[in-house]
Image 1 (tube, rainbow, N blue to C red):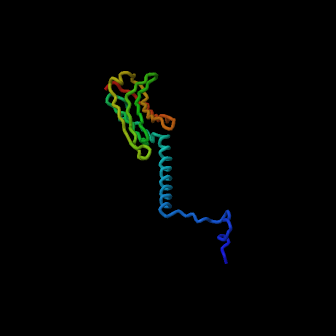
Image 2: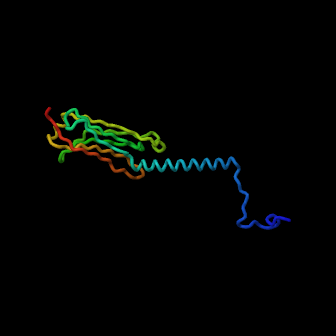
Image 3: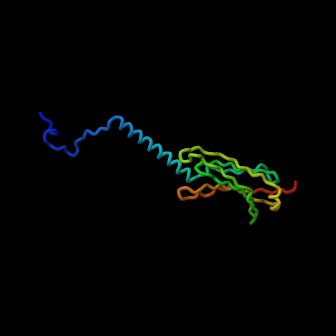
Length: 169
């Protein structure tokens, strides 16, 4: 008895073809697929980190009132995808005084490095700065701003606290 597939007939459309890859090529194919999926997952997380660059921002003042020598601290947690600018301001009515600004740098290999970065920039108030304000409530504001990525600049993260100024000691 002869096999009808072998004797002078053409293969039919749904007949299975023997098209198996050799074992080393199959291994390389699977390794490549794992590598591509790994980079897609890392890239998805890196894209999210570039969209939201500041994880959290907290404002701390060491005293109940602002007086010379008081410190203002910004506790910042960054996704470290890019540099973050932190600015300290005192606001009273229309008078705005910038106390200082600092940069928190990102990770060197920001795309592939998912570690967060923490920083605590500090500003110390001097008598010269406080003399420019009246002895009544003032707004202490810190602003953390990321850098443009993917054609978009993320909105700044702002924390404010109303404090009283004490000029006499």
